[in-house]
Image 1 (tube, rainbow, N blue to C red):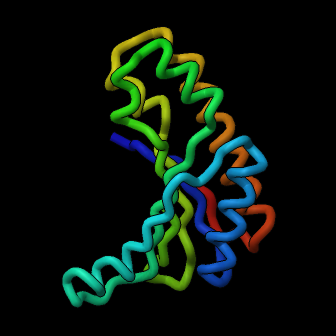
Image 2 (tube, rainbow, N blue to C red):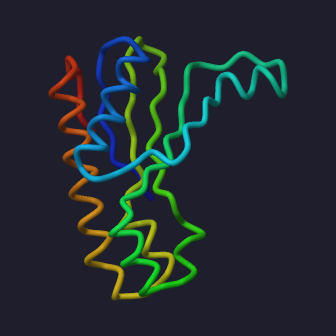
Length: 138
């Protein structure tokens, strides 16, 4: 089962992260948390790992609407967007597929919210790909 939507781009990793955050902001998302997996694994386990960031994205009006319909939805928030280096010198930007995510709740009232978030994430990925040299879109 596919549970993300993604695009692969070429560019400097930090530039891709900055571009992704800006594209999220343009679509009304704030980044509530930014987890640097590479640094965390080095600090906690003394293990080397590729550059990998988890951005916890939240659109407050859509989150409010979703939580109003399904109070337990908070367990699935914020929506994660990941940016990581691939083995072939590209950078992958991947967002959780909100339609798959809210499918867990089995609440039809969330369908329109999931569709809205999905459309916004698709625009975020398209914006990142347009801003940077796009190599492939999956």
